[in-house]
Length: 110
Image 1 (cartoon, rainbow, N blue to C red):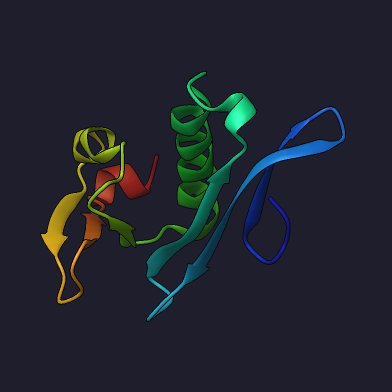
Image 2: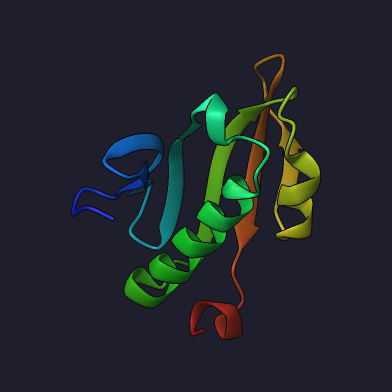
Protein backbone atom coordinates (compact mmCIF):
# COMPACT_ATOMS: atom_id res chain seq x y z
CA UNK A 1 0.00 0.00 0.00
CA UNK A 2 1.17 3.51 -0.69
CA UNK A 3 0.16 6.50 1.39
CA UNK A 4 -2.71 7.63 -0.85
CA UNK A 5 -4.56 4.32 -0.41
CA UNK A 6 -3.43 2.54 -3.56
CA UNK A 7 -2.50 -1.15 -3.44
CA UNK A 8 -0.31 -2.48 -6.25
CA UNK A 9 0.08 -6.10 -7.36
CA UNK A 10 3.44 -6.63 -8.99
CA UNK A 11 5.10 -9.46 -10.83
CA UNK A 12 8.75 -8.56 -10.57
CA UNK A 13 8.78 -4.84 -11.35
CA UNK A 14 5.71 -5.01 -13.61
CA UNK A 15 2.38 -3.81 -12.17
CA UNK A 16 -0.30 -6.44 -12.83
CA UNK A 17 -3.13 -4.92 -10.85
CA UNK A 18 -4.16 -2.26 -8.40
CA UNK A 19 -6.95 -1.11 -6.14
CA UNK A 20 -7.64 2.36 -4.86
CA UNK A 21 -9.40 2.98 -1.56
CA UNK A 22 -10.54 6.13 0.18
CA UNK A 23 -12.71 7.14 3.09
CA UNK A 24 -16.02 8.52 1.88
CA UNK A 25 -18.43 10.05 2.82
CA UNK A 26 -16.99 9.96 6.36
CA UNK A 27 -13.82 8.64 7.97
CA UNK A 28 -15.54 5.50 9.29
CA UNK A 29 -16.59 4.37 5.79
CA UNK A 30 -14.16 2.78 3.36
CA UNK A 31 -14.94 3.21 -0.34
CA UNK A 32 -13.32 0.72 -2.69
CA UNK A 33 -12.82 3.09 -5.59
CA UNK A 34 -11.15 1.02 -8.28
CA UNK A 35 -10.02 -2.55 -8.72
CA UNK A 36 -8.08 -3.73 -11.78
CA UNK A 37 -6.28 -6.95 -12.67
CA UNK A 38 -4.29 -7.61 -15.82
CA UNK A 39 -5.84 -10.44 -17.88
CA UNK A 40 -2.64 -12.45 -17.54
CA UNK A 41 -3.22 -12.96 -13.79
CA UNK A 42 -7.02 -13.29 -13.75
CA UNK A 43 -8.39 -16.65 -12.73
CA UNK A 44 -5.45 -17.52 -10.48
CA UNK A 45 -7.07 -16.61 -7.15
CA UNK A 46 -5.41 -13.19 -7.21
CA UNK A 47 -8.71 -11.34 -6.81
CA UNK A 48 -9.64 -13.12 -3.58
CA UNK A 49 -6.10 -12.94 -2.18
CA UNK A 50 -5.80 -9.22 -2.98
CA UNK A 51 -9.12 -8.40 -1.30
CA UNK A 52 -8.28 -10.49 1.79
CA UNK A 53 -4.87 -8.80 2.13
CA UNK A 54 -6.34 -5.30 1.62
CA UNK A 55 -9.05 -6.02 4.19
CA UNK A 56 -6.50 -7.28 6.71
CA UNK A 57 -4.29 -4.17 6.33
CA UNK A 58 -7.19 -1.71 6.31
CA UNK A 59 -8.93 -3.25 9.35
CA UNK A 60 -5.72 -3.08 11.39
CA UNK A 61 -4.71 0.40 10.27
CA UNK A 62 -8.01 2.27 9.92
CA UNK A 63 -10.75 0.24 11.67
CA UNK A 64 -13.59 1.23 9.28
CA UNK A 65 -17.22 0.50 10.20
CA UNK A 66 -18.50 0.15 6.63
CA UNK A 67 -16.99 -0.89 3.28
CA UNK A 68 -18.87 -0.19 0.07
CA UNK A 69 -18.46 0.14 -3.66
CA UNK A 70 -20.45 0.31 -6.86
CA UNK A 71 -20.26 -2.30 -9.59
CA UNK A 72 -22.12 -3.50 -12.65
CA UNK A 73 -24.73 -6.24 -12.66
CA UNK A 74 -22.32 -8.15 -14.92
CA UNK A 75 -19.71 -8.40 -12.13
CA UNK A 76 -18.47 -11.99 -12.20
CA UNK A 77 -17.63 -11.92 -8.50
CA UNK A 78 -21.05 -11.18 -6.94
CA UNK A 79 -21.13 -14.60 -5.22
CA UNK A 80 -17.73 -13.84 -3.69
CA UNK A 81 -18.96 -10.49 -2.33
CA UNK A 82 -22.06 -12.18 -0.86
CA UNK A 83 -19.78 -14.67 0.93
CA UNK A 84 -17.84 -11.67 2.28
CA UNK A 85 -21.10 -10.37 3.86
CA UNK A 86 -21.76 -7.61 1.33
CA UNK A 87 -25.40 -6.71 0.86
CA UNK A 88 -26.17 -6.20 -2.82
CA UNK A 89 -28.58 -3.36 -3.58
CA UNK A 90 -30.08 -2.02 -6.79
CA UNK A 91 -29.33 1.60 -7.67
CA UNK A 92 -31.22 4.21 -9.67
CA UNK A 93 -28.73 3.71 -12.51
CA UNK A 94 -29.61 0.76 -14.78
CA UNK A 95 -27.04 -2.05 -14.67
CA UNK A 96 -25.34 -0.63 -11.52
CA UNK A 97 -25.32 -2.22 -8.07
CA UNK A 98 -24.20 -0.90 -4.69
CA UNK A 99 -22.44 -3.39 -2.41
CA UNK A 100 -22.35 -2.63 1.32
CA UNK A 101 -20.62 -4.46 4.17
CA UNK A 102 -21.17 -3.28 7.73
CA UNK A 103 -18.35 -4.60 9.87
CA UNK A 104 -19.06 -6.02 13.30
CA UNK A 105 -17.01 -4.80 16.26
CA UNK A 106 -15.25 -8.16 16.50
CA UNK A 107 -14.29 -8.17 12.81
CA UNK A 108 -13.05 -4.59 12.85
CA UNK A 109 -10.74 -5.38 15.79
CA UNK A 110 -9.11 -8.46 14.15
